[in-house]
Length: 281
Ligand code: SAH
Image (tube, rainbow, N blue to C red; front, side):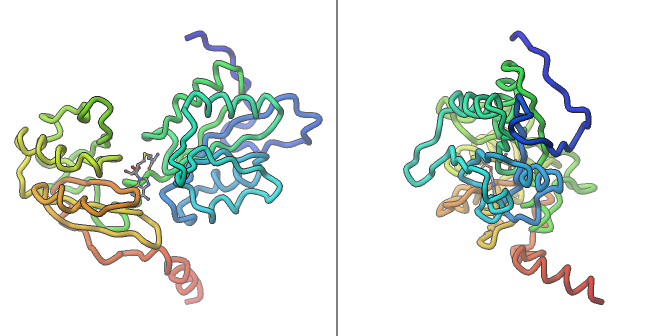
């Protein structure tokens, strides 16, 4: 793919795009990770990018509390209207953000979790590069990190989990295309994104490849949100545990998941109160 030069800003990292629209020929695109839901888990860089947005192009998973951080004058465009089950095709999203930036706007493309982890951020970055549009990527807290922290179940743990692998359970061709033999080795954590509907199949394949049915497994729905729910089970019980899950959820399989506390370690709602209390003492 021909790669055209990208305009670099003089300040690497965070750029508060200055100037008025009139003296800015080209806008820029910011691919911003919004984190798993709780606004507390936004990075400062994401916050600053939002504050400087002319337009916010966001997914359905991004909460109103986070969208409210953008200036009220900033236009909001939801590209995943979940109610009508209508999602703008990826190519259209690519074209939209490029067109808005070419129109001189500072575009924040806000995505759940991290833009480069099952977020299709790479395609949007490539589209910007191809069009010669300045594009910055702001990392976000991916769902797995929030789910693990909330449960008090580390993704790696001395003696129990030497590695962690993030995989997608999405089945484009009937079943997820994964290396079951390597995922079935013990002492590692496998985190499955988009795996609720294929949970039974995933458990079956992992077990057939040699992972013990007694391996601890944790299902975390709505990590970091007020309605977060955790179900601690085993690989054999994974399919049953995934039944009835409606919100975004992760399947986490591995020895260290046995440490999971099903009562929140940090209740996202009371977290701010916790900080306030410790700053007073
Ligand atoms: N870029 C995102 C992942 C997008 S793919 C990230 O880094 O987190 C969408 C999948 O992410 C969902 O199907 C679900 O598996 C997971 N996910 C997103 N938000 C979540 C949350 N708050 N709790 C649990 N899983 C979540």
